[in-house]
Image (cartoon, rainbow, N blue to C red; front, side, top):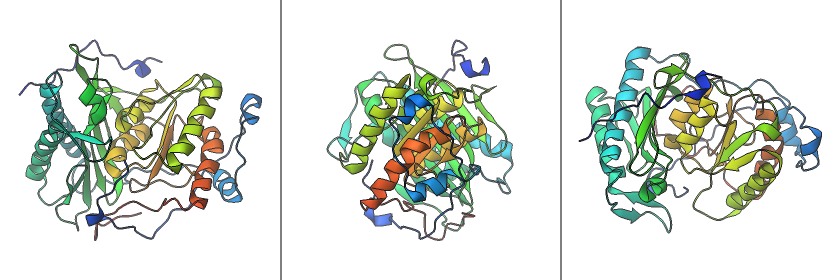
Length: 366
C-alpha cells in the first residue's frame, strides 16, 4: 500500500496573508436550539436583490453572537492523543485512496446518480479498524455502513471514507477523507486529508483541529479571510442528488450570489469546501441536506480557524442538523439575509429541517 507524502511545495497561503437516509436507523430527536445571530445590512448594490425576511428570520438575525460548536472538554482522553488518533485514522484511509486514485474504478449506485466505489468501502474498513482497535468502547457513525459500538459512549466518531466520490470516480479534484470525533455531541477533534493536483500529479494536504487548539494545514496554523464585502467574496455551495424544492431554492441562491459576488463555486465535497473557508481561499460555504459525517470534521476546522458556524436559517448548529453555513465571520450575517428567508420558505412548504439523526442513548450536551 502506498504511503502518502505531503509535499513541501503545497503551501497554506492563508498563513501568509444526499439525501436518502437509511430508514433502519433514523430517529428524529425532538429538541431545538435558540438562534443567536447578528444582522448587518447589505450594501446598496445587493439590497435591490434582497429577499424579505420573515418575522422569524428577522428575530434570528437580530441576536448575537454565533455560539461555539466545539466541545468545551475533550473528556478523559487528552487533546493531543485524540488529535493524533483522528489524524492517523484519516491518513490511513487516505493511503487506500492514494493507492487507487490512478486505477480503474469499480462503481455501484445507491441512487440514480449517487454512486459508491470499492475504494469507499476499503477506505472505510481501514479507518474502522484503526478506531475500533484504539477505542473499542467508542460509538462510530459512518456513511456507507450506519452506526456501531457502545451507544452510551461519550465519544461518537463521524467518518466519511471518501467525501466527493463522484469527483474521485472521474479523477477530478476535489475529494477527501474526513474523520471527526464528537465528545457528548460536540466536535472535539477533526482531520481532513484533501487530494490536490489531478491525474498523474496527485498529492495531499492535511487539515486538522482540536477544540480550543486552533486549525492547521500541514502543521501550519491557518485562519479565515478578512474580506468583509460580498462583492469581493468567493463563495462555495453544494447540491444534493434530489432535484426538488431545496435543490431549486439553492439554485436561485446560487444565481443571486453569483450576481453580486466574485463568483460561486460548486466543488462537490463538503469537507473540502469547509477546509477552503478555514484556509482563507474562499469566504463562505453553505448547503442543505448534509449528514454528520459530512460536517463533523470540517465545521470544527472552520471554527478553530476563526469562522462562525450556523444553520442556514441562522439558528444554532449541531452536526445532527440538515443544513450548514460557515464563513469568515465578516460576511455571515450578510449572507444570512438572503439564505435565511429562503430556508424559512422551505419550512413553510413542509420540508423537514428537524435534526436528522442522533444514535439512541448517545450522551450529548446539546
